[in-house]
Image (cartoon, rainbow, N blue to C red; front, side, top):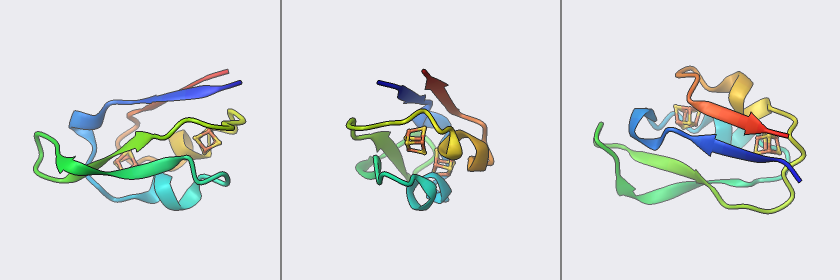
Length: 66
Ligand code: SF4
Ligand code: SF4
């Protein structure tokens, strides 16, 4: 199964990855990162490695491992 890694400290909280994951595997964190925004985290589960999250992230901080 695929998985992703997110550089949370560089996340600007646009949540494009959250709304574009077809399997709803990316969630909004409760705590703030160093930019003062609620970043996101990979909740685990059935990641297909489709890379939609990485493609839409304007900061290019999501890596996909297939
Ligand atoms: S690679 Fe695809 S399935 Fe996996 S977290 Fe990203 S958008 Fe979701
Ligand atoms: S798309 Fe990138 S910058 Fe936007 S919330 Fe997701 S990880 Fe953060």
